[in-house]
Image (cartoon, rainbow, N blue to C red):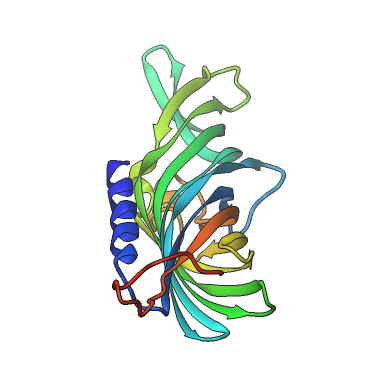
Length: 258
């Protein structure tokens, strides 16, 4: 987490030194709702709950024209979910047919998976902004995310057959090593700016890269079902603009209207 605050501090300090009028910067903070959404799902055997977590950071904007801007940001974001899935697979089990005689018999098993995903990301969105009204800006662009750490832990309860011949078993897992370290996707949203610098904004984003590494589900004996980060963000922020003034005592900087 220390590296996140160092990166954010560097972004804000360096942009604060720029004295070019087209440049301005700001800070933002809010909440992010969402989680990994499967490309296809079976509602009869799987369920989940999306996570709500913080997203805070800063950004730099460059004004291309009166109605157009480009924005680059850097933010910490919490992403996750809780999930449950029940699936059935065929298997072979050793069984003592007669005393001292062991053979394998075909049977099946049920696996009840319960897990919680808590992931910490560093997000880098790059957006094009268009001014739709005096105070409203529409945004669209792409983003990249780097996984800083977290966990994907849970337990699996296994019942073999009807549960009368073989005892039930429970095992635990942590799949954090199977999650892709780099993610990227698209984002759309908008921002309403007040006169003196504060704003409220909202954005939806969807990953274009599967959450888990390719082959992970196959290694567990399951069908490959890609999961994609899908989040909605809403938050507040403050825009700071810099302006040069030709005064005899030098260059002065002050807050401008957004």
